Image 1 (cartoon, rainbow, N blue to C red):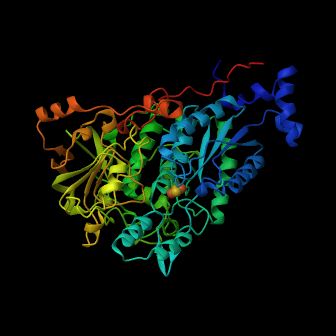
Image 2 (cartoon, rainbow, N blue to C red; image 1 turned 180 degrees about the horizontal axis):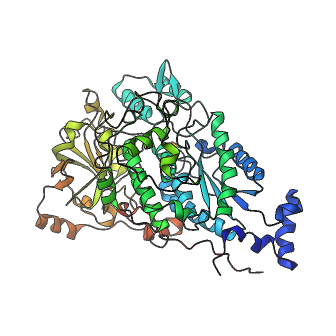
Image 3 (tube, rainbow, N blue to C red; image 1 turned 90 degrees about the horizontal axis):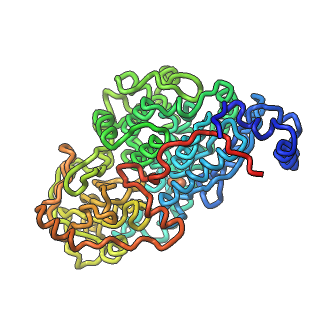
Length: 575
Ligand code: FES
């Protein structure tokens, strides 16, 4: 195999004479494709995560057609292909378990086929990192196009946000403030248009990361899926990718260290999801860029949260778009020394040139850097004997007075134990306690589920208390909120100290000091460790591969053998 100029990569298939060229062209022509399309023009793959099992991406056939229009206009040859689609709300145990599997599908599908450039259609949470990871391991010219958020949810005169209001309504049902019939009535009102979650959850966060990294076109983050301008964005991506192939502007020229630094800071400024920590570390790993938990803390430490969006705030993505969207946020960072202005983006411009003329139309939604929505937006990275390799907390979603707290541990050994006992009236717990959940990390459960924001016990909610300190090795939905410590590494299932916590132990959380401490002597912890037994691994199949190779949360949960990239070398013909 040899590395080829991507401008000529497809010619290895379509530009040859003899039997092989005949085979490559002839079968394609059964789709009614005329001969001139095989004349060496750029072949653009449209990597589609459309699926009726991924409702957030169910409109992607339309989006793909718009990309094709743009490709044809510029003299390219578009070819759409499906890849594994990860539907957040349906897949069990969790889509996170399959992110790496999907990334392998993407990487191998791109490399194995006659493609010179790729447009990635991404939307629902894991579809963005899985496609970026796979594509980065190939390093062709690439543009990501997000599907866009749903229109604002509306229920009985109230604006309701994806996920965020599910947590709220669930608590209200528990406290008797909402009937089950009303709860179910809200379902259709929350999700009333095409698109992904319209809170600043993981999907909107990752769409913002696409724009901040420069791997998507400006305004990618916020245009609602139902807005005609989303189709225009896809059309323009189709036009631009053909030019990118001709310019040989590859992914590696976009996904630089400077771009990742920008993305981390933007995540702070939008009050973005903690899931972005794991995904960006994994994407950086594929791109050969060093990015670790320490970078998240140091780069995000001084970044204020500018955006007043649920779950941290009041508004939704539709409002964010009308207020000016992500370009306004990036401009604020640039004007305050928190942007690598020269980072290159897919439209061939430096990121500062894309945003310097952005205008804010609503300062309630996008606050200025000098008068932010919240002083601290960045993800805080905690360390201590309970998380030697780190844990994270999102201060913008937490209760300020709980960020310095010492409390008695109430331990749930796994998610089943939590579900069985959390609402037991005899559970020995009050609001000063620290809820601890084990066995939900990357290997636990398995798959690193979004259960870290454990709903509080009903008897505490009924007293009007809606936040407590919670500690786990799990993730949390980007739509969720609370004083929730997540991603403790190493996880309990890998023998991390979380496995050794017992009821009644005292736990200290000091967010300002970046400390998470289990107040138990080293000697006692060693005694407990000697008695600890690792859970049995899955017997077979993908679950076994996953268990044996997934890296811990602080390293992005990629598979150990997938970190890095292999380029876009054309594989040898085998027939
Ligand atoms: Fe798909 Fe939230 S469920 S983005």
